[in-house]
Amino acid sequence: MAPRVVTVEADGGSRGNPGPAGYGAVVRDSETGEVLAERSESLGTATNNVAEYQGLIAGLTAAAELGAAEVDVRMDSKLVVEQMCGRWQIKHPGLRPLAAQAAGLVGRFAAVRFAWIPRDQNRHADALANAAMDAAAGRPPSTGAAAPAVGSDRATAPAVGSDRATAPAVGSDPATAPASWEPRPTFTATRLILVRHGETEYTEQRRYSGRGDVPLSEKGRAQVRETAARVAALAPTVAAVLSSPLSRCTATAAAIAEALGDVPVRTEDDLIECDFGQWEGRTFAEVREGWPGEMDAWLASPRVAPPGGESFTHVAERAHRVVAGLLTAYPGETVVLVSHVSPIKLVLRDALAAGDGFLHRLFLDAAGISVLDMWPDGGVAVRTVNDTSHLAAL
Image (cartoon, rainbow, N blue to C red):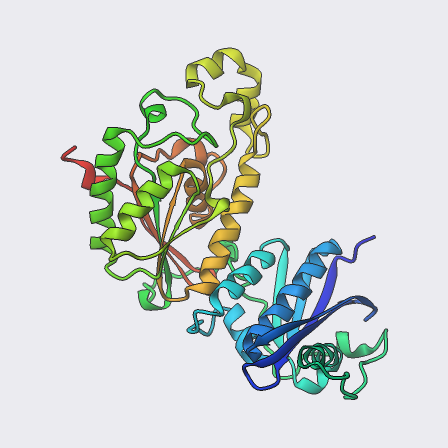
């Protein structure tokens, strides 16, 4: 039986910074202290911080493989702990992809709590990391302090100097965030600009358009030009533009990136539209006539998928991973996400702490823009939903 709660102890380092680098990670049963898994690897030449993040990633991956529901992460890297809790910015661009990867893993658990511990309480992971660094340097393992014995009480000892960082596991539920009527400072928030792609032929024909790669129509291309100008006016400075891999989104994202001064566009598979299975390409009326029972069940619950397709619950998990990664990688910055109806609706549903009925009551136009601010403690301010004022002249 998989333990519900595990403790991950992780460390990493390099001899030279940068220099021969490696990491170590230990997963323990939080109740008994038993070692459930060990991970270590040489990284070639890297910095201390890169190695520390790699140790965290390896530990979280091992915890996920063990089927854990909750994780207590303990590291002697103040930088990694504070950045993963959202209290420190990630200024080095080389660390952002690693932080985003770690945040994506965080999203796979019910809860992840980060705590700083002194190095002498992290001896097991430290020993594994040192052995990996020795291997990277091509020399015999050093004879440092011995790792704690299996079953040691170190895993259950309180973390010295830690606030247990129970809060906000990255991307925490807005419904549990501190309530406040007082306006928050926007410069501390990560601003997400959510853009639905421009119109396609399927949009006009009222057809289910999921994974099929339907290009923008002539009207859609005109919408995209106006949308790009609007986004540039809303946010002259943008840290990143992310897009679904489908061409109707990448074309929209490319126009926005150009208007922003050629900001690089990164495709993100988790932003792709819901897989509508057998309904793909069919009109709404055709589906209602051919699958009446299945449609009623689908409308009644986000856990129900179209025949051969994907449930909204699964789409929500994908969208959550993206948002969690962005909050960690781009604290206090603005990011543009170009996606589809379903992922955007699900992000807005969660941001507003709304019920599932929200999904069928909110209408999102092609090329519409929504804006929300998200703070490290889980606070959210939804500022705009489905703005189409820039399309008035079309």
